[in-house]
Image (tube, rainbow, N blue to C red; front, side, top):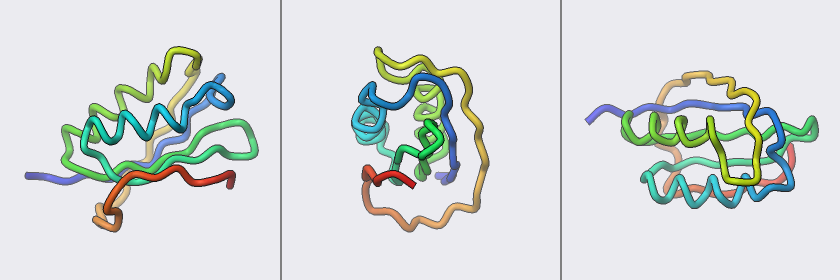
Length: 94
């Protein structure tokens, strides 16, 4: 079993459309740990950790987002897996 960690910054209509809450639900469904938060510049940032395939599934979900969102881009940065999260949480504006 191989683990992976990525940080994503999602742009588009991604605030005020339940993006964080739906990301939390999706992360639980895919078995991914980490966090998601709105940023002051209107983007959403998240860190996902878990089994490689689960993280890839989460990334695929982010490219579409929840029904009310319009995702224009997803910037992905791969980071060293740390295993520091026990669950997935919503954080507040950075």
